[in-house]
Amino acid sequence: MSQTLPPTILAVDDTPDNLHLLAELLQPEFRIKVANSGERALQIVAASPPDLILLDIMMPGMSGYEVCAALKANPASCDIPIIFVTAMSEIESEAAGLELGAVDYLTKPISPSILLARVRNHLRMRQQALQLQEWNRTLEQRVSDGITEIERLGRLRRFFSPAVADLLLAGKADDPLRNHRREIVVVFLDLRGYTAFTEAYGADEVMRVLAEFHAAMGELIMAHGGTLERFAGDGLMIFFNDPIEIPDPVGTALSMTQAMHQRFAALQELWQARGYTLAMGIGMAQGMATIGAIGFEGRRDYGAIGSVTNLSARLCGEAKGGQTLVSAEAARNAPAACLRAVTPLPLKGFKEPVTAYEVI
Picture 1 (cartoon, rainbow, N blue to C red):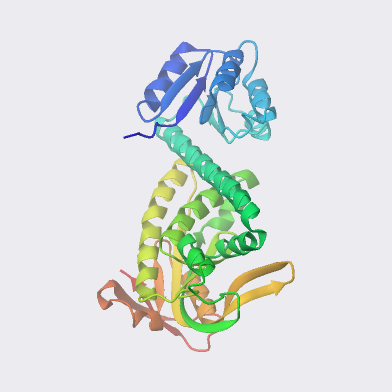
Picture 2 (cartoon, rainbow, N blue to C red; picture 1 turned 30 degrees about the vertical axis):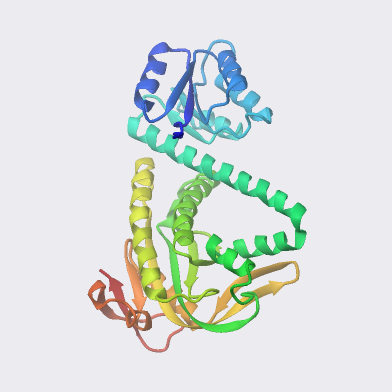
């Protein structure tokens, strides 16, 4: 039975002790290759590209900057993530490295836990990028079999989980883009401390954190069969029971939110190691909505319109970090033991304070 090999990491440094330290930290979780010069690193990459490169800057011969520039200029190696690991701590040095195409920058002496966390994270994002490339390759193959079907597939997969999209394509469900009314469960989530974070850090770091957040939450949305209505910066809106009706939309939504809080706790550890303070609140509501394609010719999205979406967003806005607030309608269809009533909430757009519950 074949076994998947661990990712390969190339460590490049002209100091043997540094190479030995990196190898000790990364083994046995990863396969390690080492190079004591920039020239040797390029030879290794040309012969067998690694999955990630840890690159020193100050080296005899080719500097790390020159190695990075050469790798990014080569189509065969331009997608390999590069993390600079260097004793140069000036902001200008870090900026220069990132402008060349590196994905990260660590200064010596390195923290083992931070090094491992960033290596794992960038390998995960690379794997997602490779999966996307593979999906695009298979999509191109399908184009040759029927361009019309592929265009419809692309539209559906923007919003729906793969399983739901397959049902729609197989003709086992109504066309979801046709306007219709249905009772749905809406989940809205966003980050606490995000505005302060964006003001304190550069655009690249903000986008990196959002990518990590979206990837983690997106995986759980797909796993639970949720319909992704939209991204709104740090916010996501998901709903259940459309386009495919399911037996227990509230229970499914609660299961997803619980998994999201658990997954987010792991993200928080990673971000706290970088010095970021971010938390996540979730709001959930149940009610009728008008659903279908909205927009204009050439740019249409799949959307839900109704007070249930506003209520979910308002509850999300009131939720503290790590908390899920649930509307009264949704609470009636949830196990009583998992909920606790909170003081009625005065919400923008609602005349009277709204009855709500928090998930225990």
